[in-house]
Amino acid sequence: MTTMTIAPTQALPRWRGTGLVNQISILTGRSLRALVNDPKLLILSLLQPLIMLLLFSQVFGSMAGGANFPAGVTYINYLMPAILVTSGVGAALQSGIGLVTDMKNGVLGRLRSLPVSNVSVLVARSLSDLVRTAVQLIILLVAATVLFDFSPAGGLLGVLPAFLLALSVSWALSWVFLAVGAWVRNAESMQSVGFLAMFPLMFASSAFVPIDGLPVWLRVVATINPLTYAVDASRNLALDMPVGTGVVGALAASIGLLVVGVWAAVRGFRRPLAT
Amino acid sequence: MTDIMIEATDVTRTFGAVTALDGVSIEVPHGTVLGLLGHNGAGKTTLVNILTTVLPPTSGTAKVAGFDVAHQGDEVRGRIGLTGQFASVDEQLSGVDNLVLIARLLGAGRREARVRADELLDLFDLTDAARRAAKTYSGGMRRRLDLAASLVGRPDVIFLDEPTTGLDPASRIGLWEVVEGLVGDGTTVLLTTQYLDEADRLADRITVMSAGKIVATGTAAELKSQVGMRAVHVTLTTPQDAPAAVVTLEKHGLAPVLDEAKGELRTPVGASADLALVVRALDEARVEVAELALTEPSLDDVYLNLAKNKAA
Image (cartoon, each protein chain N blue to C red):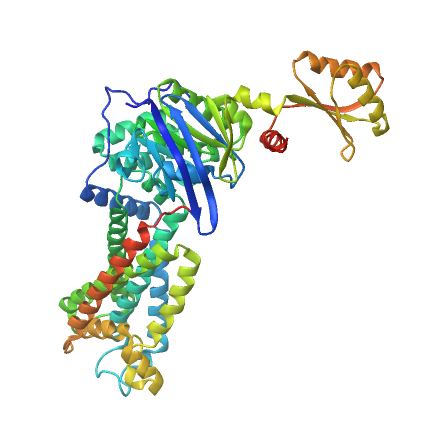
């Protein structure tokens, strides 16, 4: 190593930090760049919904046309809007896990030693995750259209709002999981808690089968399951069926989750990282 | 610029019922190196975390570069660099991207950030690996990138938390040279280590910590004179010769200590002439030596000695 000329010198510019907006855009760029450098996470998170699409469209495909099932709708057209929502939920969980991973591997420790606001770190992560989720959902939509003949009655004008709805639900939930991550700070327990919470939420809902066909107790669970409302709204948009207050309800719930999530995440994240 | 760059006054930190730091006070003048010496759990990292604003103190005050760590966090963070177990680089990003990221967060423009990153990569011999993801780096390269990352903002004060733990000897010496260069240019350094030789080589003053408290402070020479000296460890071919060997060595004015369990004879030596004396004495007594080693006082010796002094 050569002679050092890197110590403080009056002649050289001194950097002391940058504004919030800059911090957020730089940090968002960093997460997106990491995603491009190592697309493993993106590919892995596509795998589960793709397998679900394949399996469910084959296993439950014959259900279309049965009692309780909307007339004239193929199963893939029924299923896909729900997959958008459930994939969004899965992506939201990844947000929290990503935050905890950054805590463990020292990246957030480095940021804490720089003049960077904690809020910027959280906002940047949620924004980059929003982009990741959008890319993921678009790939799923293309795959469903090309491979599984997804062509809902609502057409592009119906699928677009369904996609945006799934994205907003996912974004709101990502803040909830960021909050969980900021308090729990353990990727393993987050993964298992997330898994435990997601499966009942997914299956005890209208995601895969019409709830009228469910046993009574499960129907009660599905009726109070917020995922049912998001799934119904997304599906009705895509299938060009009457939406009613579904979209408004789903958006209102998302805003509620968002407010609580942001508040809890900022409070939890403010606590010292080191112990 | 103040003369005292790091100043902690009666800093205490508790985690629940555990007291990690108990009334610690230190002072580090501008352009000098303080070595914080202690085993795992002595409180070194906790002190570094408090001084770098990562962790608030439970009580007491601390100033870095003249700014209060509890109330002027951003001012402090704009003037320090931290390398250690706690702060690391992003493994997914390349070396150059990591450094550019930090420079940009500190407020550098795109081009300035790039220039600074290239400059540091060059200085740390990382130019060839600049575009590779940090996760592909070897331990030594990784540590150099960590150190480069903490120097992006040309900090007045750098904190090195066990910078050479786990490094091979060559990388270790390379890192020492970098630190010496920084100090030569006027940077103030706080270094934590478990190794007496590292503190000896780099630090102007050494503070020894144990169980959250400072147990000794001084120059390396002062501490060593407290600890005693280097020692010759002799293993005899025939353990039965040991008593005779002890007698001979004592006759030559040395003070051997016999460890019967290990079959080892430990003789403190002051001047280098004493080393030859040990060999000559044993040879004269016709005691056959299986193994002979010269050891420097270790952190354990410092601890043992401090404990002994306290008991006395």
